[in-house]
Length: 513
Ligand code: NDP
Ligand code: BG6
Image (cartoon, rainbow, N blue to C red):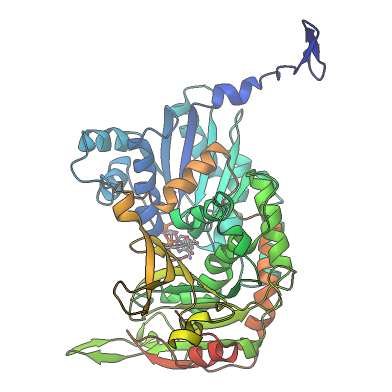
C-alpha cells in the first residue's frame, strides 16, 4: 500500500486530507461496460430494455466503450437480433439529428449468444465472446435478468461462476417478481446470495425510475411549504391509485400466479408510499434513503382481510364491441379467483402518521390508464366562510395531486374567491403541468434505472431488508385470501371497478379522488 494511505500531511501548517489512493482497476474500467440482456428474445427486453439502452447511447450517457449482448435459448444470429430490436428502437423526439445513423452505430455494438440458462458451459462461451469484445482491457459487466423468476438462480449461478468480469465489477439487475410471499422471497434472496453479494444485486422496481416518483423527495425536502404539513396534523388521508384500461393480454399465465396485489401493490404502490411517508434521510446517499424506507415499512400495520376489497373483471359489451372477461384468457385457469383489482387501507403506526389511512387502489381493465398520489388535507378549522356566507369548506378541503402518468402533473386544489362583487368560493388548481413547463420529453423509467445500475447508484433499487419488510405487510393477507378462497367481486371490463372499494373508503370517512 501507499505510505500515504490513512495518514495526513501538513502544508503551511494546515491539515489537508490525504488524497485517496486511486483504485486503478475500477478507474480503468470506468469507460468500459459489457451489458448482457438475459432473456433477450422476450417481451420486456424488446419493449423496454433495448430501447432504453439506445436512448442512453443516443444521449451519450453510456460509457465510451460498451457492448450489448443478448442471451437466450432461441437460435438467433447477431443480425437477426439487430433486426428484431431495430423495430422497437425509437428516436424519442421526432426529427432528432442523425438518429438513424446513431441507431445503426448502436446496433453494430449489439451481439447475440444462444445458450441454456442453467449451462455453465454456455456462459463460458459467452465469457469468451465478451473477452473478445473487451479486447483484453479491464471491463465491468452488467447482467439484466429479463427472464421468468424460476430461472433467476440458474442464470446467476452460471453467469457469476463463468462470466463474471475478471477485473472490474459484475452486477445483476433482477426483475420482479421477487417471490410471491415472505418465505419464497427470503428463499430467493438466500439463493442469490450464495453467488452474489448484496452490492451486486440491483432489484428493479421500475416505478422508482418514473420522473414524478423521483421528484417526490425533491417536492418534500427542497420546498419549505410542504414538509411542515406532511403529517397527521394536516393530512387526512393519502391515496395511491393505479389503473390500466386493458386486461392481462397475453400475460395471463404469469398474472394468474401473482394477482394484482403482488403485481402492483406490494411493490410499485408500496414503494411510492415509503418514499412519501419516510422521515428525512441523513443524506441523499442510497443507503441513507433506503434506511428510512425500511423504517417506515417496518412501522406499518400488517394488512387485514377486513381492510381489503378484491375484484375481477368480467366480459362486457359496449358500443357493439365486446371486451373479454379475465377468465376468457386461454392462459388463465377456468374459475380462477385471482384478483385483477384490489383496494386496501393501510396504516403506519408511528408518531407522524398515526391514524392516517393510506388507501391503495389498483386494477386492470378499468375505465382509464393512470397512476397518481392524492393527498387530502384536513378541513379548515373555524369555518369563517360558512358562518358568514354559508360556504362549506369541509366539502372542499385542499388536495395535492401528483399525477405520475400519463400527462405528468403536480397540482394543488385551493379554495379561491370567484372574481366579482359577490362572495363566492370556488375550488381551483395551482397546476404544474409537465408538458407545458418542461416541453422536453421525459425519459423512460428504464433509462434512469439502467444508468444508475451502470453508475453504481443504488438509491432506486430495493435492498433485501426493504423487500422483507414489504412482504411482511402483505403475506398474511395473501395467504388468507387463498386459504379462504375469497371470491372477488366482479366488475365490467372498462368500468370504475367494484363498488366495494367505495364502502372500504367510506369506512375511513374517505372519498376516492
Ligand atoms: P418472457 O415470458 O417474454 O420471457 C423472456 C424470455 O425468457 C423468453 O423470450 C424466453 O426466451 C425465456 N423463457 C420464457 N419462459 C421460459 C421458461 N419457462 N423457461 C425458460 N426460459 C423461458 O418474459 P418478459 O420479457 O415479459 O419478462 C421478463 C421478466 O421481467 C419477468 O421476470 C417479468 O415478470 C418481468 N417483467 C415484465 C414486464 C413486461 O412488461 N413484460 C413488466 C415488469 C416486469 P428463450 O425461449 O429464447 O430462452
Ligand atoms: C408491471 C406489471 O410491473 O407494471 C404489469 O407487471 C403492469 O402488470 C406494468 O402492466 C405497468 O407499468 P407502467 O410503467 O406501464 O405503468
